[in-house]
Image (cartoon, rainbow, N blue to C red):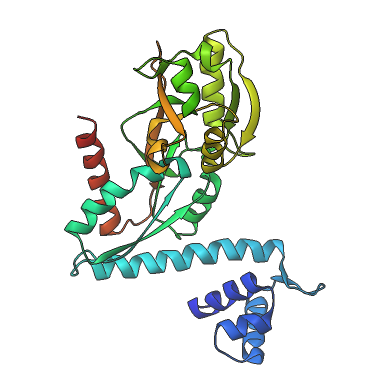
Length: 305
């Protein structure tokens, strides 16, 4: 078994067909089929279930897929680490972010690009579980996310650097703010509880929803939840249309036009969201990733002063 066979195996596993895998690998089908047979013979196990129209992995095949991804990822990281010993910072830096943290990326990216113009960026968006999967597959090196990082049932695999806390604000239709609040645009939790409420919640990530509900309950209040929504942009659109109010971290509104919405400080509460940069422990981080972490922390520090 060699790295070439493992690469072939991963492509066949992804495609579910030898024919399409051979096309993707720019090779003929018979040699690829022969390599898969040789691999199974060497391991003395069936890696594929061939009973259906598509190839599916057996339990042994699934284990080999995970190990092959790890081995090839380590090989790639080793090559990259060796090359970076004598080369400057360059290449593609892949970063993942939850939607509610996207507005925090432009400033550190701009500063980083000015210092390291040979680095380009690939930005991916998703929830904690998708981003954790991309970290594991090495599709991304870093994640910026709200904490706790909910994919971490066991936090041990992750290294996390906490950034400056992000205060929560109440976000309402602009017309409601003009009618209901004073010029300082502050509002109490009791008043927010009187409006139809739109909450950020997905089937898997519920941390922010739970934190907001806890704040209501601390004040002896029960919000009138009109809608649970998994997408920040949809929530803002619903608020702008006058459907209801929401509570989100203050940095979120930087990504949206403010003509039809207004953000109000929440009175008499120190209510904030924690943010962190997340990456996998014991995995090689490129020079660009390490420098970006330092610059992100520096940007946050200077911005909070």
